[in-house]
Length: 250
Image 1: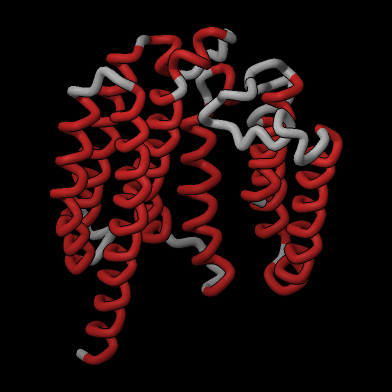
Image 2: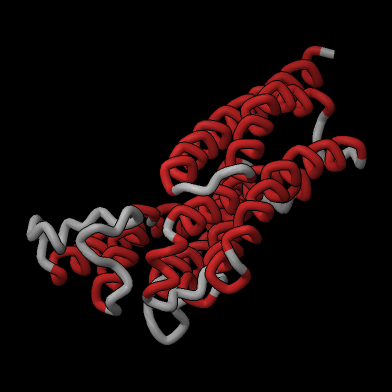
């Protein structure tokens, strides 16, 4: 599904004139003539079809909830870039990424293993979702000049580059704040606080991005955010595993 989303994004940004040969946020395979536009579109459709076929097995075992999750995922994958919604071009890309890659992926992964509603699974998706939003925002901050030139209304284009930098800081700090609050309210086990071990990387990231004035620093910030997301997610998962083992042993 995610690969299909990338294909669609590549195709529709090309079709609507939002990308060019020098765009940092695009793979530019169409401009380099490595693939035709129709091949890119076909690749996206093929990925969605394959995801749907694999999803049928889960639907047969787990029922219509998986069907609903799949339909939402397909809709976000396509309309993220495509008309009539063009969600990414209307400043809605961040929240769509949070829903699809934060909430749906986290809760969906839980549901296919334990098929019932869990507020704890929803809670676990919140700090992860904020970090994914931070990744998307850094992508938009990096592409600020390019997006502004083609009137792609990402949040940094709508509210300014400084807003994007401060928004990035809020998202990163918010992931640790929400994690702590979720633990205090009993929605996540105390062992999850081990994710705070990644905070120094977040602090360096925030300080660098807030003081940045050039694109290269934003590119570095995006790489650091990606690494932070990976490390935070792994350590948070470790905390959940430890809590599960301890609860069963004791």
